[in-house]
Length: 123
Image 1 (cartoon, rainbow, N blue to C red):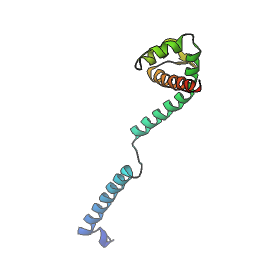
Image 2 (cartoon, rainbow, N blue to C red):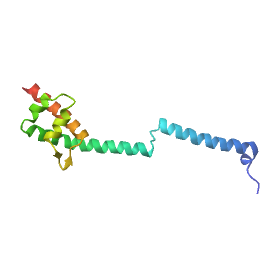
Image 3 (cartoon, rainbow, N blue to C red):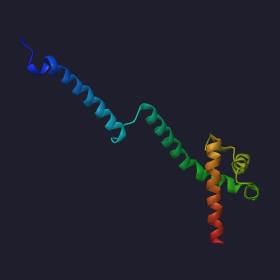
Image 4 (cartoon, rainbow, N blue to C red):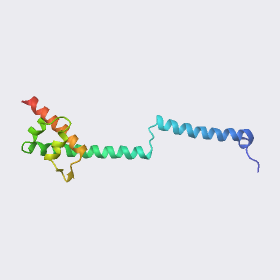
């Protein structure tokens, strides 16, 4: 059986080069403009989404616990902007069985600042 003309000699080389170039072009376009991502990027995006979802539930609870504690707001207002997350950690140890960590304390401090600004404008 004879091979088709396209698979013989120079044509065969050009066909294989075209296939390789097409595959590389497809992958390049897919990653740059098509929105394709690697597995590592997907894991990172998934972790950020999970953390964001968890924070959206825990931060309002943390703010409520913190503002209900005696003397917490006074100490919070007296603390500098970089030590406010530490003040949050002093008064709130756990939020819904989740231990206080830096990211939760920082988000809670931002929430407390927003809450205090909201109550200040109402007064």
